[in-house]
Length: 290
Ligand code: G1P
Image (cartoon, rainbow, N blue to C red; front, side, top):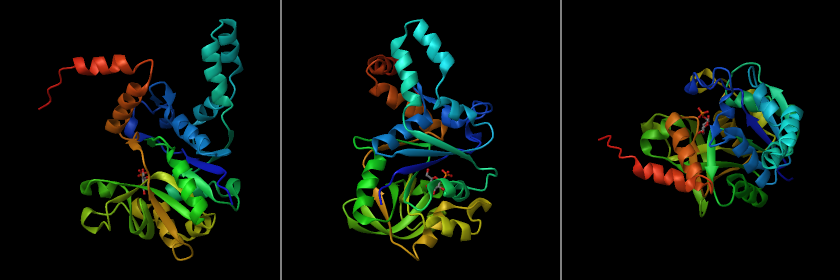
């Protein structure tokens, strides 16, 4: 069965970006001039996803407004003859079909995914974590769907990380079966450095089989007292194989201040209208932090 639907957990409080995120969702922070979440939605569409399901919470209505039609804004732009901007604004609301449901309690990523159970139904689905922004020639999710179409089971996106960073990620233990592809044998959520089974870290893109929901329901709270998706995927291994793809492309952790700023610089440098000026500005800065 094709991967048609994508889940976007977006109920987190965004405390790492306070005070910026006091009144606006972290998913709406701009990377140059587009909200973070739109990059992921565009990646989903470029990977042939047909339906986007966003798991929201309190204070997240700006996300719904962003992907909706804004009659007032469109009318003003039309009246002023700002056709380019009018197209940008209209295109956003015509991207794909959106559904929303709420995560009423912050009980972890596994719980957030479980909130999408009814909207997903019994079919494989993609999960996008909006903090992870990936710049790639072939969209990361498309690379994963290509592997899914061959293997027909859950696929995780992974990247090698420096050993000292393993405790910030879900880490897999796997056996390499093809170039960049691993059969997953074990997973640990945020292990201490000396207990990590490898340096292959799960990045925020997953393709999951619908059976994952039964396993999430049975999974007890794990690291941090939260219901961890990583633990549920580990349990799923008792029923089905799971593969991990070391995808091609650059990943930015936009949920972290340094990663967010790096992503802004990298994306601005890629832009036709800004790239040259930003490069010139960066060269002019005589930074000495040593
Ligand atoms: C989540 C997952 C973790 C994964 C990470 C990727 O953690 O629980 O397994 O490696 O996303 O970004 P979080 O960063 O939300 O704490």
